[in-house]
Length: 453
Image (cartoon, rainbow, N blue to C red):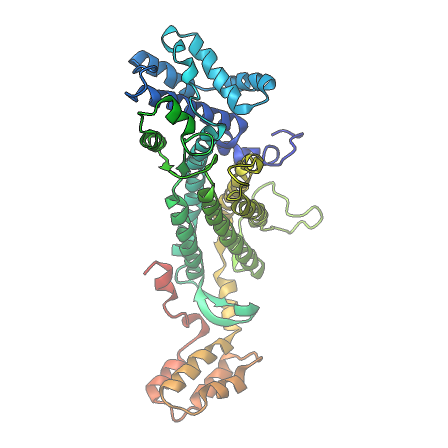
C-alpha cells in the first residue's frame, strides 16, 4: 500500500482492488492493445487476398503469440518510453511491435502491416472490450458469486425465523429473516444475469467506419467478413455499423446494469445496518478491533458502511459513463478517451464493496431472542389477520372495528384475545384459529419462499 497514492483505490484499498489492476491499469490497456495489434496481423496473414502478408509458419505464430502472451510490465514501460517521443499511445504500441519484428527476419517483412488500415479506435475499442470482458468474467462476477453464496447460506439458516416487518418504519405483518434475504438474492440474480448476458461489442473498420483505406488497397477482399471473423475470434460480438468509434452503447448498457446492482446492494447494506441497530443481528467481535476511539463497548457495522459508501461512488461513475459515452460529436470527438480510462475506477469501487461484504456477512448471526421480543410486543399486527377472517365470514365493518381497536395503539396478547372472543358471530373453528395465532406464527408462506419454493 502506498501512503502517497492519490486515489484510495491504489492506496488504502490496494489489496482489495489488486485483482483488477492487471486488467484495468495502464499496463492492462497497453497489453490489450498489443494483443489486438498482433491478432490483426495474424488475421491479415490468414487472408488469401492479401499476398503481401504470407501465411505464417508455426515458429512465426509462436513468436507473435509470445509478444502478446508474455507481455510484461517492463514491456509496458518500453512502450511508454516510445510514447514520450510519439506523444501518441497507440502509435507507441505499433512502433514497439515493429521493433520486435525487426529482430526476426521472417517477420520483419510484415512490419508495415502492423496497424494496417487501422485508426487508433480500431485498436482501442477492442482493447477496452477485452478489458471489460476479462474484468467481468475473471474478477467481478466471481466476487459477486461469493457474496451470493454467503447470502444463500444466511437465507437458508434463517428461512423460518420470524421477524417483525417495518413498513414505513412502523410495525407491520411479520415475515421471516430468511425471506428478506431471499428478496435481495432474487434482485441480485436478475441483475447478474443481465450483466453476464450483455454482449461486448467491437469493430475494426477504419477511420470513419467505411473501410475506405482497406478497399483502396485491396478492393477484392471482403473486408466486412474479415472484420467480423477477427472481432469474433477475440470472443467479442461484431458491430458492423459505426463511425470512427464503436458508439459505446453496450458499455452504457453494461454500466446501467452494474449501477442497478450497486443500488440494490446499497439498499441491502442500509437494511442490514438497521437490523444490526435493532439487535436483530449480532456481530462477531474480532480480537484487536476497536469500534470507537472513546466508547469501548462499540461493535460497529463498519463493513456494511464501507460497502455502502463505495457502492455509491461506483453508482455515480457508472451513471456518468452511461450518460456520456454514447455521445460523440459527428464522426468522433475525444471526450470518450479520457472517460474510458476511469472504467477501472468504478469497478474498483465495486470490488472494494464486495470485499467489505465478504468480510461483514460471516460476522452476522441472527438474534432470535431480540426478534421474538419485538414480535411479542406487537400484537397489533394481527389486526390484519382478524379483519380478513371477519371479511370472509361476512361480519360487519371488520376493518373499521379493528382500526378503532389498534390504530396507533400498542395492543398486547390479552387485548387481542378479548376482541376475538367477543366475535360471537364468527364460526367457532375460525375463532379458535385466531385465538391460537401469535405474531411469530403469522408469517404466511415466508419460510417456503425463503427456501426458494
